[in-house]
Image 1 (cartoon, helix red, strand yellow):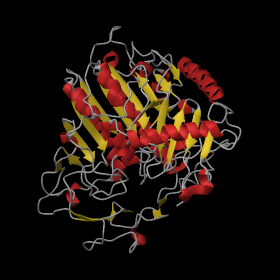
Image 2: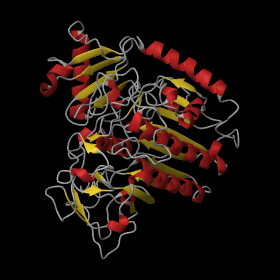
Image 3: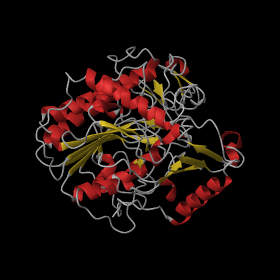
Image 4: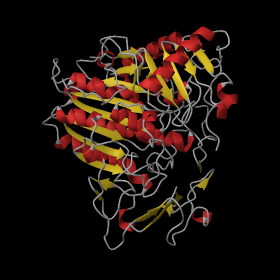
Length: 530
């Protein structure tokens, strides 16, 4: 498998963080002026309520440079761009990991995922990895009186040890960790089982056609990508050669559940419709909705309405489909007269990847598009392109549109929304979450001072201001250096010039701070944190 490394490092793109922020500021001013005749929100009041609705739109593998408001010129994303023009757009926001399961774990729990064993990328039949005894972002808001829901991708395990019985009540799951409603796909789109789960049951399951899943060996007689490649809609570049469902072979093996199986091309429509219905049904009391979209993760199979629309191949088409989803959700907020009463965040679970197991032509058809923009690396890497993600906050009447270079992490959402809604977090809960709500609301340019970055496996990076330290990794010495790496992102945003040998005092200081955080949880406290 070839990952996007050199392709997403355009030469002479920007020379510094400051220049990048200046360019983005000028761009958003131009976009705001162009869109002035098409306001995203009709402000309902000028004074926001104490408990605004919260919608978190979490894309899957969307890169820092994948949308127009973050510099993309080859792919048109008018809905996200309009949203960005009306919101506060962050240029230094981070997922907690460069891969999906650990990233989503950290976002919901407020705990760095590497603190807990078993938070790596999960198979589709894994048990729940979030401990229901501890607070989560949704449970914090639930206690504040919110009705909470998740629609879309889960990938945090279901059931007790041994995994779920797909033909019975499936618990514990989202409803046991703070959500009142769930309509989810269990894992990634490229993993079995390819079914939706509503609350505790597989949706549309015929009990006479029970589901069985295996990640160890083939079960049943259904064709597989390995044995029957002639049946595939798209070829394979690595793995993904298990059971063929909807013309696409997956990771793992599955039998049964024919009436419950999804059609990939319809998933975005189905998830979006559920989100729109959720907003309308719960508009009369505070609600929290996580829309965990499945685009542009593989297998990339956008609805036929979007095929060929991007000019950048199937991955670009999936981004155009995601842009439509964002527009539908934002429009639903407006139509229900909730604009000034709703915080919406649009972000991604990690950085981009182009070739991720399917021969879908995504890399061939980039057409000059750079998914990570000026950043180095992408998904699976601890470079900035792995964890630095799009992050836009909108709250009309409260958050002033603009650009912020504050350092913030998705791990901080738990503490931040606890502070906003007046909730206390018990000792031991959300241990790595910092209240950065003043930065999220645009009241300050100061976010957190330090942040641990993680590739999702064994490599760690550490941010302290503009300095970025990467620990040595004997498996990747050629990549990160025998003694690790050190970059000054203030002058080297693309992490091209490793200056560790010339700055040993700085690297030793950051190495010591990282080890302290890893060993003892001594995350430096920001003044905004209670």
